[in-house]
Image 1 (cartoon, one colour):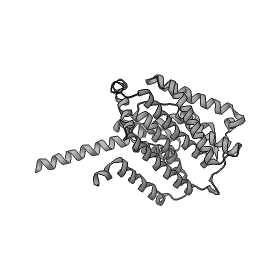
Image 2: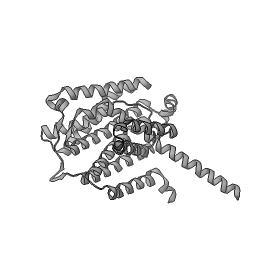
Image 3: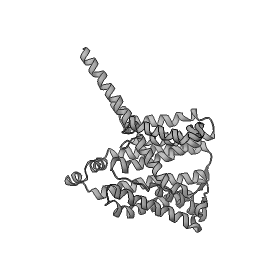
Image 4: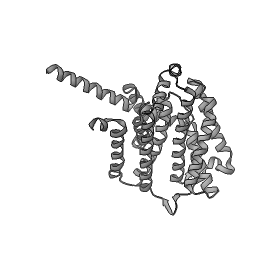
Length: 325
């Protein structure tokens, strides 16, 4: 029983659920709830992106494009054409999954920096289309989005959105944990270690890379749709290259090949800029210094490095007790 509670699938998920349940006790006002909702939305994207980068070893510098397509797809269908928000979100998610499948087939044949450049180009194309097609997207000015509603119930207010996003984050983490502990997850880790070696033992590299690319795009699309309805307005800034870099940075900071690392990275890098506002003009300098220091002293990312340090000290303590005995 204790061993199961210590495992990521049960113990880690339970710990995350406890944090989500108790965190409102520390949220004093709507501003803090707003930051918590943004953390949850970024974490959902990062969980999916970590499956692609951390486990499958496939870099993507254009994931903000999928986030933006989810946001704008829901906004256009719900606000301009009067679709029910849930139907708009589900339809947009299916469309983004189909697009990721079509785009992923050719670009995932590339490797290394070639793949990074291809995904960067994909993100730039999405950004340019959203910026220039102002008849549908509002162009640089953005587009207003109707509130999210299911039947007669309208999701309004930071507190309600906090619980909705919290539950969806738990679902995203649960799905990701089950995926990486399945045969597909083991295949992804084999691809990361050696694509040639994985193919030698019978793993279809192209299929598995495409699968995880589509899954990560779906995570980003759902988060984008929710972000659009939550904020009530969406602009091209969420589709820009800088947002893609922010998402990748969150994954690397928290720890690649760590689902909970993705959540920690999203939480840290979403809240840290808010905490550093006290430094005024030096905010970005301090933020950069924190990033550099973390990656120097915790090179594997926050969660894997801390876990390794804890395990090392635990082993040393066990050896000392065995020696004294």
